[in-house]
Image (cartoon, rainbow, N blue to C red):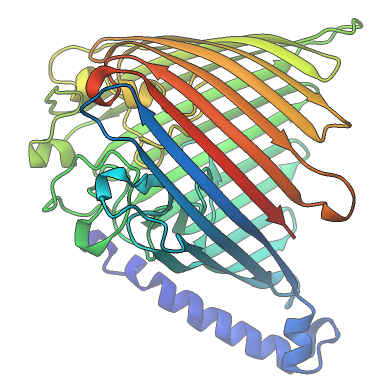
Length: 448
């Protein structure tokens, strides 16, 4: 893509050059008392996480084979001490290995966990950061945290981005943010590419399994994303708004307000509202003749609204949420589908009613309800969640999702260890073979 040829295409090279110059300068000036290169790096911070996940897919249709996958992983992070009044360097090494447990039949592998290869090894993060005077600026390969582009960290490795990110907090409670994504590394890839979850998993040598992947192999790459956002918190109210320009796909505006309602009672009510508007003309789907939900479209046009109402009491909560994605007329891609390049098929978008397996982004225009109950116990070491969601959609019919989640964090010397089991039972014709779909995820992790 010519859009990335200058200066953006040279961003990684520029980051390394600038970072190298700053390190040399910092060491020579003995910043923060680091008199040697060894002293400089020994003053940094090392952290990480070890994971062992087992995922199992059971299908009710006789003509669809069940699938599973096991993998262990390590996420190792290092950030130097600050130098030159606020600068630091950070890097993360990600590695995952199936330990030879993949089934010989590719159809029986849950490729969303760690792909089809036995191992993944990647430099997940490599960035230069500045923090000071109410500002944070980070440039390079990094984890990103915004509503419609983030790590989607529900597999052994998270998604990361080659990007420029900045945040400024001029006054307490108000933060402005900006993001420019250049390339994307999916959860199962070992490098960065000019693609997203709509591209096929083998596009230009990528190994991006788990996305929708319905674009053809000859689809042109994308120039990435430009986004601006703001968060405002006052009292028990938090508001966020974002604008995304998903180059070659569409433009999206998102707003959400959540509030804890004041009361002197033991029962604490909360409520929230959200809205999404997306539009756009010529896009990669139109250029390649690719349909979405079986519907052709010349441009993107989507509008969604939602709300949530609930109560909290005695370390427990109950809530009911509703979202509606308005069907659009002829000419709208997917009949009014929300185009979400970095959450599609991951079910990690911010809509209130999105479930573990899917939501309205994955199902298309329609309406949805989600009822959730949660409870913590044992001094918050045990967390229990159950939910039921129902979707009534234009192109995928009626779907229901029943979800259970158990998290236990042992006390004492094994602090940092967590054991989690996520289970969802899906019913609807959208499932492979049209039968039920039971998805169980066992997740063991140790953070240090």
